[in-house]
Length: 216
Image 1 (tube, rainbow, N blue to C red):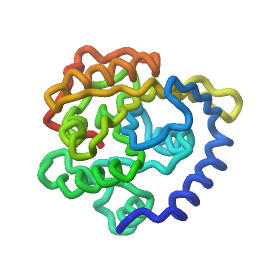
Image 2 (cartoon, helix red, strand yellow):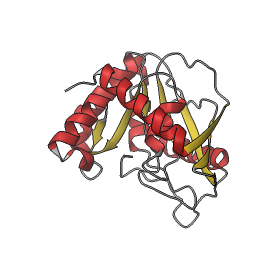
Image 3 (cartoon, rainbow, N blue to C red):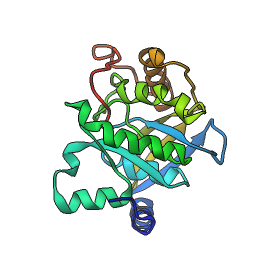
Image 4 (cartoon, rainbow, N blue to C red):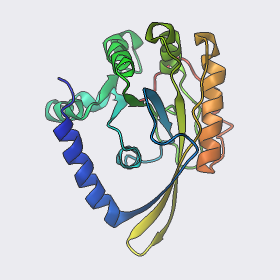
């Protein structure tokens, strides 16, 4: 099942209406606008609300990499796939190959794909990065015949003003890497940029880029 544009557009419209009542989203961008061509977007992850907020900040249609467990329920799975969700098995990466091939075909078609590099929620700081998917994208750059820009995105939830809560979203400048062997250090650089953009500390006790798990 592939994404249906009307499902994505309708969901984004509903999110816009609801989130405009609950949040005051302020966006700053250190990247070119509009963003042309394919890109990997790498946001901070604190709450489930990060997902609709990112879809509202970026004008183009986005595809989200998500953990496989979210696709275990039939009707919800169909809805996520219609939205453009890409399931990833974090425990057995071999099962992710079909999803990764789909991800590469999206990049080849000039689409934007969202990966949460921390892999799970970290609310008091920025957790360690998961480099496996980033490494796989770097390994495929030659087949794509182009360097893929990786955009770190900071999200900072602020105080409430009445019913609405302030949310600062900061999109960093695009980062590039050459070889798959650069993936671990490159992921660390991405995590450090997310920390800067979110104005949140690195969780040093957890920090240490991991290559054994995919983000989701």
